[in-house]
Image (cartoon, rainbow, N blue to C red):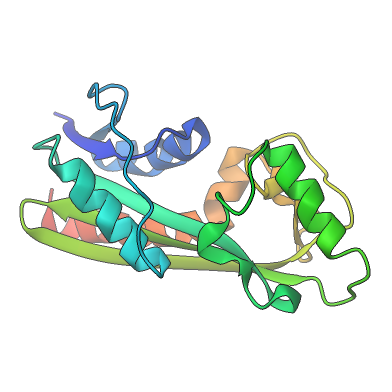
Length: 194
């Protein structure tokens, strides 16, 4: 029998990534929409961990289900970690516009190293546990690929000679920052919750 777990995101791409991991160990992943939660958690905090914890606590007021919340971001070395925890909020507009704006910032930069970071928080009753993941790569010269979301088209993985947006979900789920954190969450759930 499947146990329900709420994944506190409105991002369909993220939801699909969570499903691939959690359904394998007997969880039915439900979204905020499925639970008819229309409130949006404020992104408060000075780190990925703080923001994820605050999101988890916010949504726990609307459900009795175990839930996961996350915060993630892209940090570019030559921009001193920018956009970081503000990856989703540093400017308005579409993902395409944000990607182009970042490429413009790096136009004359040779150091294009970057890291994707993710912190997932699992909250059930009073138990709150954190899982972290990261992936190092580079910012490409131009967007490539049509899969994924966010900064995936400009995040280049030298060992694969592809951007994130050129990987199918199965490939992405082997190496992504979120996948690394999700693998730790899955290990925890298998050990303590099933």
